[in-house]
Length: 382
Image 1 (cartoon, one colour):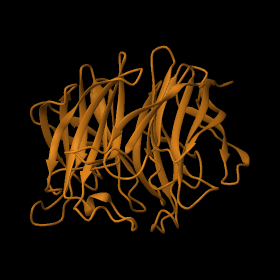
Image 2 (cartoon, rainbow, N blue to C red; image 1 turned 90 degrees about the vertical axis):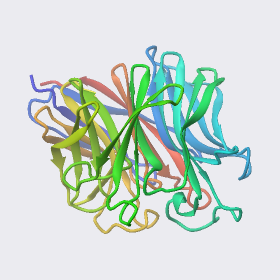
Image 3 (spheres, one colour; image 1 turned 180 degrees about the vertical axis):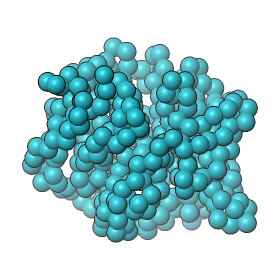
Image 4 (cartoon, rainbow, N blue to C red; image 1 turned 90 degrees about the horizontal axis):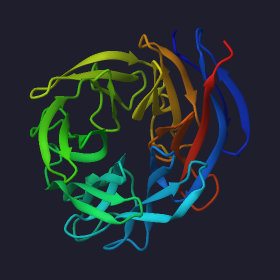
């Protein structure tokens, strides 16, 4: 039987009210019903939601603690029980320390009784990072590192070290908005490059197999292609029937999202599997899950006018792909996202957790807050 998806959910507006919307597809024996929205503390951003075998939940976030400079905590992890009650105090995961510098973007995985965090760090010139002004932090950095750290579930550090340390040519290695996939006792870590100048004619994806001590076991370089892997960052990966698949997007209207098959071992190559265009800007598909025969892609979207996310914010979306690689539904999970929102998802029994960063509707300035949307997965009446 076709296991496409029926969605019935409440979409929260910036004022906190809700309206009910429903999108259906024929032969849809599964539905997702929005149950609740949980708010994490103001100032949290870029959630990475993970669920253990016993239903416990970890959400790793950016949450600066302390004054800027050496010693400032940048990432923390919150634990929740299977009823989504917070357990204990948040764990500190990263902080600004020499020689690596200031932590920035992160991704995480849960293996056994350990939390694994891969994160980017940046060093800035003596004058420091500009306090104001948009654009990537890499525009102001003198070097970048890609770090790996492991913790037990009480927050005790078990390991910390570089995967790639203090690179200075960002046209060869650039680490923001990377993605990863846990594969047994190792990780596949995908990073990007800058492109468009003499050093490198076009940007590429760097796909590294890394053990849990940060040692690079293998490295592959895959080209960015408007019809295949569209972007080097903000992507996600999944194994489908033992095939490695990456979902990617580009920050422009009409580009849509693309699923690409990555083949080979010693010499990897890619080919497009399916494309999901839109008149809107579909971008940053930062998570992908399989539910039955369907795929759920968490990504962001906004109108084709583009521009500054503060003036034209992204919204978190959920794309439902059917078993024939057809688009079944596309749902706005929220509005007024903060920056690039970075949605991630996890399955908790018969529930789907969808995390994203909203722009805090009240409070000083431009501040994020992580929202945890809880959906119940149940058979439809069909």
